[in-house]
Length: 290
Image (cartoon, rainbow, N blue to C red):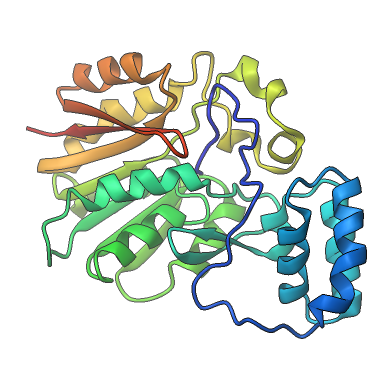
């Protein structure tokens, strides 16, 4: 489960979904004939990037009936990515569906920071907790040239089903369960990169989230407890026994939470570095086992 900012983003689901590499220029529908009316309907429903969304819907729909259904779902407020069945993330097309957390563009910064922890040409042992759709693990292994062994974990059965679609293939394993509990014990003390994009929205801020997130994404993927750091504390408590010496835990928070999150990780005996990116705004903590 990847997660929204505890200082709710005005657009936690990307308002503009770029066309991922490899998307064919044509579609089963003539976008030029369908788009004008669709753009007007989307704009009337409050979609800021109505032209882009109309183009994506036309490219994805396999016929006029399916386009009408997809348009009705989007106009009713369903996230665009759920309607399309995929999200663009780090140059990949990630399968998503109703009830599954949509990967955010800012989380691509977490992937880049994780990839920077992997020596060139290495095949890392990676664990991705709260994996949601599996976007972080898929993008990280892609950044490593497809090399490495990945174990992704989520407690939500819908997310697990989705992650198994995105992480099919040798060396990719998806486990259903709570944090470290379902992982093979043979991984203890061997994990080189541990990504944990835990939920970090404070419970009291959930009503402030836009309806796309609040009404269509699973609450456990958003709710980080009273201060947004409840799950991070649980991860930090167990991470040292799973990390290899020199292995790194990486997690995303808001900038406001970063100082307390760093104290939590340091309190577990990890060496913490905080890095930020301006556009889109992102804060990542890297916590290395000495």
